[in-house]
Length: 344
Ligand SMILES: Nc1ncnc2c1ncn2[C@@H]1O[C@H](COP(=O)(O)OP(=O)(O)OP(=O)(O)O)[C@@H](O)[C@H]1O
Image (cartoon, rainbow, N blue to C red; front, top):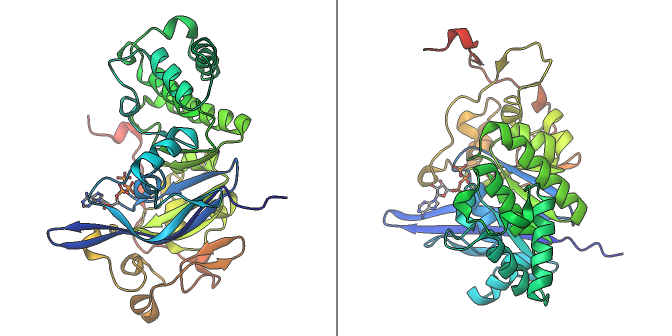
């Protein structure tokens, strides 16, 4: 049996040269992904979530670049490919879905033309066969009257419908992996759940693995098989979703998970972690989370913890396995105001 992971990210480091010096945007990021698995990547804004996805698809915006580590897809390195070679991998083996569907769609061409072209680049189907496949894909993504909508331009679709088209486009070459970066953030709240549900269903049916970048813990809880928590460009903790939600070990994960509202939960408060994530220009020594951590001790200030196994998870905390779960953030928890208290 083939036990080779679909994707392996090993000790990835991404640096960004700036006028004020070099920023380390990602440091020592390692994880792997199995075929068909959904990995949620979470963390506060600026933690480096998008950098991880963009490094994998070779779309790190300049001047950011990989300075250490490697990325392997089915055992073959893809981090050192030329732009042309990477272009072939994108679309064929790795599909991408971004926050704004218009990033992926060309406003000057009908969606039918765009789907047919992508299908034909990555297969040897005839024009007619590619058209049939495009229609089937649109139907599978829930676009009504798919046959007729093939002749429409992107601006003739609503935001939710456009994102369905992008999902069809991302799936059109039958990729092994899809990077979905905040795929529903720009959409109406009422369609967000439908789109996530659709993505999950189609990827399950096709055996496609997904890296789902989001700040929405609710989406993660519903969708992901495993979760990677990022903090200041590093992995804080990674493990199976259930354990990450109910049995997190890293104080930062415990704080993040405290912010998932639970239906039927008596408490009407969400815990919030005091302080803010550091900017990349001023990442603290040792464990980057130490200034906000109620458990921090001398060693945490001096030495950076690497990822260590703890149960089924990997945790970057010197105190992992030592009753972290009883920890509480010392501040008054953030209180959700009832709608009648909201300023009008
Ligand atoms: N060209 C650049 N120059 C300087 N800093 C950059 C550049 N591109 C990205 N960064 C910084 O890299 C860090 C990681 O960015 P990234 O977009 O991966 O974060 P993120 O976790 O996805 O955040 P968000 O949830 O807001 O999208 C951020 O602090 C960002 O400001």
